[in-house]
Image 1: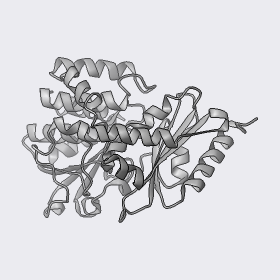
Image 2: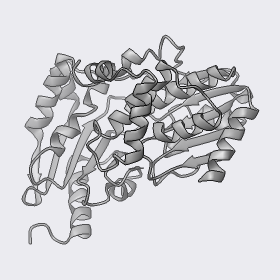
Image 3: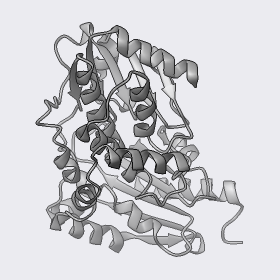
Length: 331
């Protein structure tokens, strides 16, 4: 990884104009890493533009980071061909909503921690055992070097704390905890991040959670929990699309559940009909393999996919994959 790290550092040093992006339906690691990279490039005297494509609003729990105030764009800049693309936390080129970014950028730098990253960049830095993309970026910033300002530190801390499940998931390593300490020392406000991300829930999101819990089903003797969110559920709850973020974690908390799935119906006009999220326990099935069978991917314990299949077919394939990995769960 040392050579890959050096290659990324060299690419960031040698160029002056950048466009930074991440994946669709961005989570805390994507958003925090995006902002931290943008701020780091500006601190180096570079010109940087942040882009998250598509019309969907960003998850409200991350508004406190102020991406809009820092110039977040929702479409590719006209001069993309003159810029270097830095894609953070994006395992697949297809998850970049603005295809022009990859097609037109004169160089693509891919920084990620997903083990199934397709290495779509001209320069790739993929550290599969890192807790988060933010952890990988911290190593990049240290070599540039970029000082950890309070704003950069808080963006990175938000990314780390959300991708480790508040330092409770199995990807919470000693290095991740040491990084968190460093970021707090640099000015990350732990209390503010916790309140904004975890205790500022809009009431419609709670109503959407109630709908997901109502639809939840136990399968395979309780070893699998599957739920869905239909467009009617979003409408009844008055919920925006990003409000589904984090709901699957409530399903994962079910006693005895080894694999959980949440499938949501997407708005009319979306590229596919449904999007699925998968989670498993630390010693459970590799859900990234299941996601890849649908054309998606992710981590071994957290993955996702998009599909036009119906809910019954999705459920059948998930159960079959679980049985193949674990033996017949009804036995």
